[in-house]
Amino acid sequence: MSQTVVDGGTGRASVDGVLNFAWDAGIFTATDAMDAASLTRSTAIEAIDTLIAAGVLRELPNARVAGEYRAGRPARRFELQPDAGVVVALDAGDTHLTAAVADLAGATLVRRQIAVSPTQTVDERRAAIVDHVAATLADADIPRERVLALCAGVAAPVTMRGASPPHPEGFWERTNPGLIDALTEWADVVEVKNDAQLAAAAEGTEGGAVGCRDYVALLAGERLGAGVVIDGHLLHGAHGGVGEMFAFDFIRDVDSAFGLGPSLERHAREAIAAAATDTTARRGLAAMDPARVHGRDVLELAAAGDPMAVQVTEAIGHVLARIVGVLGNMFDPERVIVCGAIADGIQPVLDAAQKTLAAQIHLPAPTLLRSTLGGDVVIRGALARARESARTVALPHRVARAQAG
Figure 1 (cartoon, one colour):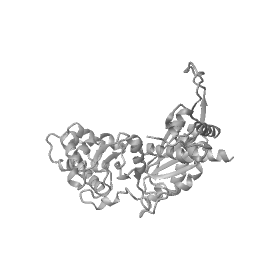
Figure 2: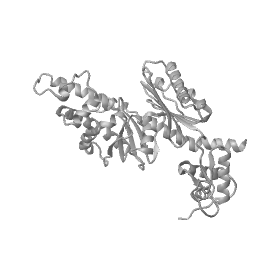
Figure 3: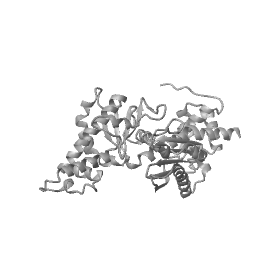
């Protein structure tokens, strides 16, 4: 395949081309950048020098000095400047706040989590979030001016501009208490996203959807939420409501938008109560206090073959099949990935759902997968989104300002 070679000046295209190559290249030479970005040598070197002057790249000792070169003229070597900036990610959950600071290579420098009360007022929650971001940066000993991009995830629909629509009970306004305005001065690029959309970003970057252009990331812990990617594009909607699951309040055999954890617990309590009069062979799930049963207990017992726990997971598998069937009929994804902390033990439910999934959908049924990213899927998605914003927006803007100044 032939390549078009770009010549002339250090315009935006040549600088962006070298930056995009350098982002994941590690140590490279001008020849490497020239070939990857389809530039002439002089243009590649000018772009590299521009990025060095802006503090985005740094030049390393040449190969001979580093002891890796024996004969001939040693090549200049470069890499992304480790101190060019950082990115910040935030998972603003109902009962916890998790923040992380990462370098441009994606390595987490500091991760900090605190508990918060779900009864906080809008003003109290906004202040708690801003204070938590400040404390996390302080822990990392990072000044605000080094933050290139910040991405926050919230359990609410979010428009492309970072605002949430009004909720009948005020939940969305409290969950997203004007964060786009509260945090706007904290980074060159600030974004607020729905948490399930960030789960989808994480799955597409490092999880079960790598290389897939049509998938749904289903957050399924306390409440259901879906991040929908179709034809490679993350869907939002006019009010950020694509993937909101309150419609399942009206779907037969699902009846609510509660997640798989609460559903497992409710079915387990009903099964224990129904078997309460049978005192023979009371063991496993049947012997548990229904008030203390947890979804994790049901999954562990089902995996060990406990008959009542298997029965409960079969019932929840049927519910999940209905949910995935609706998503499959609406969006036609190739994969549906169950995400969140509950995914660690959810395989018995997935196995049960797979048995009846084909009957729930007229299109070919999507592959149903368990996420391997655990309870950090939202914060990992926020980091991935912040890194992308740093690469495509924040750093190019800083380079342009350096050139203009």
